[in-house]
Length: 317
Image 1 (tube, rainbow, N blue to C red):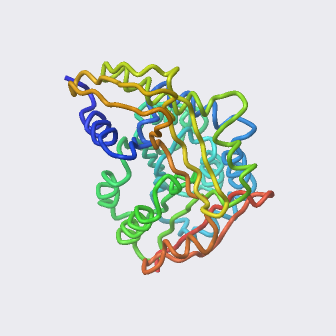
Image 2: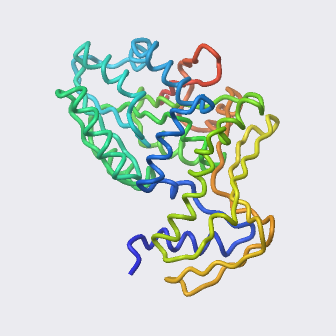
């Protein structure tokens, strides 16, 4: 019996459709986690450094924009917590001025949650932390059972991995659960030139290539499939007009792949693409459109010195 039946089901459905696709959430096994840590350290991957600068230089201003009652305990919930290296600046500032809060990192990867919990408790022994493993949509209801005031963090341009309709639905669902005056800190990559964006998804060291191909290696390992990784190549695409970076795996030859638990063969034509990731880039106009008819409004906007990235403060009306 395969351990992850949902993964198997999604692979079957995604490879049975035309065009073929697989969700980017499956990037993150132990190898994928490690590769993504390497990606975030790449000089070409500007997203991390730009948002890191915002948190490092502007955490006090961000906290002021939260408009928190210092005498009331609140919950700081981070969706897709990753390694916490950016959030630690915010946590440090909150602890330094004695705010009372519980930090709740949420991530699909238990491995990432273990790493972030260990790391942050070493840095901040007095931090109250309660990690939760799962997909955002599945854990939101549980997270909102608590009556304590909430600040939601959704940084790292994670919203960009959702298409516009799903992003619209997600933010509307989030807004419905927030109370009046509660905040969402939303980190978004801004639209910029092809030369800057494409390098972030196709670095000179080939780490993003390995990260993408690891999806097939993971299917081989967990599903006893027989993908030959040499027969696929990493293909990123981006146009400034559309403002969406896309990653694909491209079949170099005509080939067939057998997935044992499905007892099924999938055929790939030469040049056929598997869609693995989308990464929407934003500006104020696109965000306002996605927020249309929701109860969230833009309150503040914090940008890095290059104006590559923005952390928006959205408040529940």
